[in-house]
Image 1 (tube, helix red, strand yellow):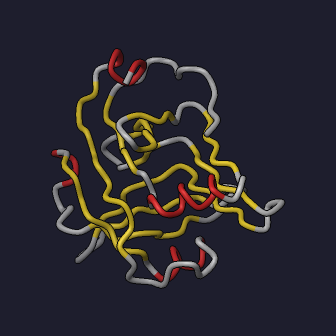
Image 2 (cartoon, rainbow, N blue to C red):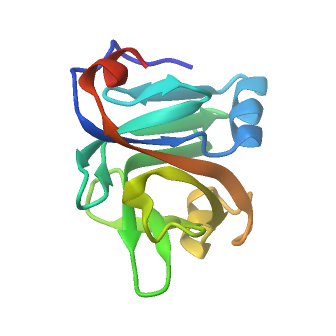
Length: 157
């Protein structure tokens, strides 16, 4: 995996998500690349996205999976937690930042701002993002939300 230097100090909270272990292992096994840019970091066996607007559930950063000369190309950009009437989702932006797609549904995450670890299931639009490799309903890696992160722990994880 490749990444940039340590991000500037931030506070608020973190969203930690591995995405899916088998995807990480597969991309690396076939000689592909898993990359991320600041302020995203890798720690505690997950990508760490700092909050941009905690109250709105908006996190920043991007992670990219690429292999086979970019025939496999997946981007997780600026994840947001969206709360609906009966569900909570994680959405990501497209590369142009013109649309958002609900990628996974979080289980029992109604009070996500208190922090916790939430199991996830791939949505139909998430299945499209992953090129149909995983069908809708597939369990993805759990998402961990950490509230009130001090700048020092964001910087040095």
